[in-house]
Length: 448
Image (cartoon, rainbow, N blue to C red; front, side, top):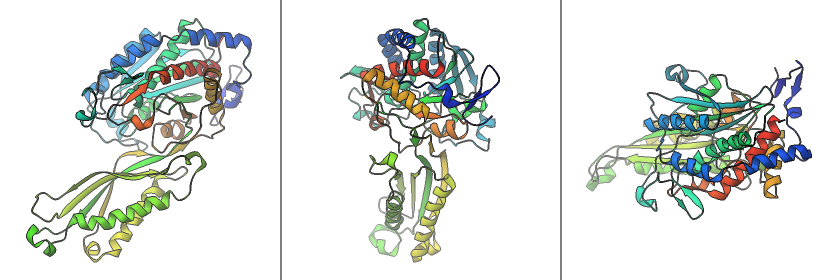
């Protein structure tokens, strides 16, 4: 079957476009069902659910990551979904040739999918339940990164914006449609996945289990915009060698830290060159495809010239660029640095690739799924949302690239608050997203 096609009940093959109704021409009967379902959204229960989920510190690779999956399954079942909770076969999964990589160790990992509906168009709502570590607790206002506290019109806690808020919105959108007594002609899959933050283990395993859809919405924090394209990112490690000596005669040694300055300048120029040409979807970003160093470790004694330095970072993968080409660009840059300096000629900088492999991914900005979500949002909020790309990697590239599922991001919260102290998601964003998802599900899947 060709990508984007689905076999109808009559046995013919129809393009996806014919299965996605034009939301600008809604029949009165359909509008009535949409209004009933929107009115059935239980905001108070949704916010309570998020508060409780935030209190589970489901950091990637921790035991609580799976604890959160088990708890969220109970919420799916309470909402009337059929659930599939399974142990991901880790050895088989991580040795698969298409495995996207991981940055933390896991002894066990759980996959979770809830489903509801009938034979017909399938819409996937995908979200990750894992979060990054909280960082310096002194920078959190209440010193508790897992409080789930409501303050200033927002719910606070690690993962509130990235992306437990969006995951809970997805659940309560389905719950509202069921509460309104509406029967879907198609079906909806709610995928709660682990391991997104460090590579994409959960979504990859869910695809390997056979779950697919005719379209997918990932409720990552988009500030209520629609994101049909994401850049990618690759993680690397650089090792710089020096020659140690006593600090009082430092000129007789070679400081790995000082030598690293040559590398730093070359990386800065590489980033500038890779961002010289702007993609229209990324015009709002000063850097669409950043190259960033996240860790730097050098030396082992204050009064010794450092003879080693390790730097770890990430390089952005541009839209339409293969990960192999991205690697080659950085590898050539390091090779040029090694060739340009007498010390590096004999003691070359070493480059190692590790961790998650985030390819770029996209659907067309005018894809029918983009129009459907945009029109659903506009019908409720009075104006169409922005449509633009995102400079970070995500599971979108797995859904599109490996699963063949047209996918976009649309969700509550601003990515600037993700991975940051005092992470939060505005309550008004959650209210807007859950209602937009209600309408989007009804229009995509159809209903009686």
